[in-house]
Image (tube, rainbow, N blue to C red; front, side, top):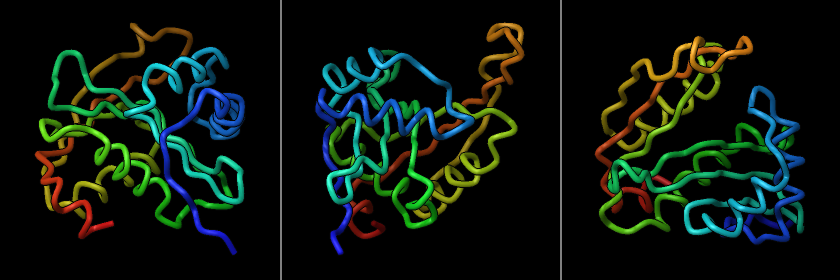
Length: 167
């Protein structure tokens, strides 16, 4: 049996990534073009997990223009067959390891009903023995169309030398 490979995404991965994200509710569905752009423009802060030539995980992220010490994780999707095997955690570790030494924080937004993501982020902070904070960010009135509010999660500071030990 092959092992999972974690790598930067290629533009040719965009279709598979789009399909994976769309099969992972409650993640927002976006256009394929967005994933083409992520793979092209943000490949250094995005990661795919590949098993037997199939994309089984994806993390989209970017260095925040407002906080150059922060990796903002936008979406993490893992194929249902590969959940609860540490794939999401490894995606975040890999994304962090691809950033420069100035990046010491991870941020993400989570809706109140997405208990799985919230628990994952709490556990991630705990594994790294660092601070986890949650604050209101975008209320429903801003997001409209019945979208739940989005809370901001901030994890850090992260000691990158712990990533190899914890992974």
